[in-house]
Image 1: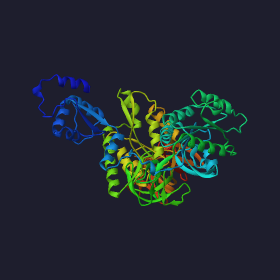
Image 2: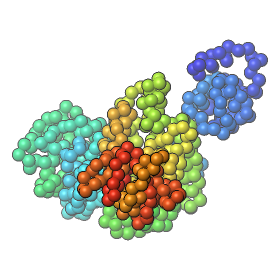
Image 3: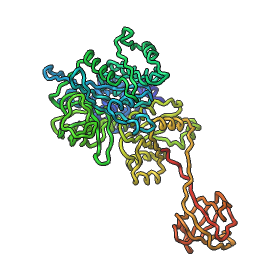
Image 4: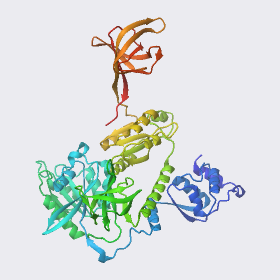
Length: 626
């Protein structure tokens, strides 16, 4: 029966059956965090947790007092007891958490403490329209060569210095990825920015992701400077780009509008100075770029990754205050003391002011891309904030975890008429990629009978904990996706023993396409033949019970019982797809015999072995998708 029907049946019962002792509310509002337990609910309404357990049992739900509950369960119980349950959003919950430590991120700032700061510029646009090439021309670096497939996979922040009207000025650039799967990262970049540079290729015109990026910029309510790129190509038509963007509300200044359009060509370096000047003119005319430098630092984590030698490294953009080496900071669930700060040239800096991007070393964990960071008075404060955030996030994740299904049994369950789900664990090299991959997978158009859930995501190598989580269910296994990461040796062995599937990717859209194909039943495992070893037949014996027995010496590798085998005679294959049915060392059965040792074996599927034949054994292994 549905929960609604069970609730109606219970409400129709007579009053004496309500013997749990749980209080009844008269529309009283109860605010609960996501993943709250019945004990948390009981604390809010001054009730005994056991009475709420009994109420849930009467409603047909088996829930313990300390178990994390889904939003649906909390709302159902609240409605049944007469309380107006409100599930607190993560943002509001975080504000309430910080308020306990007397931290107000939105506190008013004294005008006298404000100083001018550089503009923060986000580069957006369609894939392959030259965004990173344009930044290369500005930074005189070659970021494109380091990216898989020529597509920017990570987000980075850089500060460049230019001369404007005889004064040295700084501009902070945030480079965002070019594939449509990184919509979430582009959106986050727009929220942290002052000006958006919309890159449109003059030979390609306005494309779907151009409109997508434009909508993000408009939602962030920031000025837009359009860089019409690739004007050096013969088929370039900058005027067409101006006309197309007019349809989306961007009217060029030469057409009587207020949007600055700049013609550039990134490869030969045409128009770069004009673009920088346009950015600074737009900043001076439209924005009041001032920020306080007093007080604790606040800002946003643009990107984060796990470095082998340095540990967690977070690229942060300071928005308020001054961040110094030695400060205690918390970013999302990570906290620590700033051990060192590096600029975009990997040069150590001692402090960073507003609009300054730096890489911070010294955190205990990898924060999520887009997490806000703040400095506090001492280590104890940041540790308590991070621990409470971790507990809150863990409760929310546990509330959404249910039974899992494997990719192999997915179609079988669908055929049986069951609604089934596929659980994924995503591990990547940087948090921005993990977040974007998760966002893209959740939005996949999949059939109604399927469900896709991300049960865990993280940064760094695939560990034994990930494998244990994947195989936690007794009859189901989650799939682990490794994005630019590989498993540790112990984790690889554990995955092999438990039959946990690990898939490897370096370009995000390959992962998206294959998971979508797998969900629709179109993806077939790719197997490759792996040679195990070879053995030379020295003698052949006949047995009335088992047939031909070959006395062999292993020449290379190993011979394994039940392995596939082929027989080679004078360089030609005379038997294919035979099987090593039995294997002995002297009179003892053996599982495998290694190089240099003698053995006796029988082959199933071939009965014509001769002296000097070579037996080549192999096995078919699923090929990792790299």
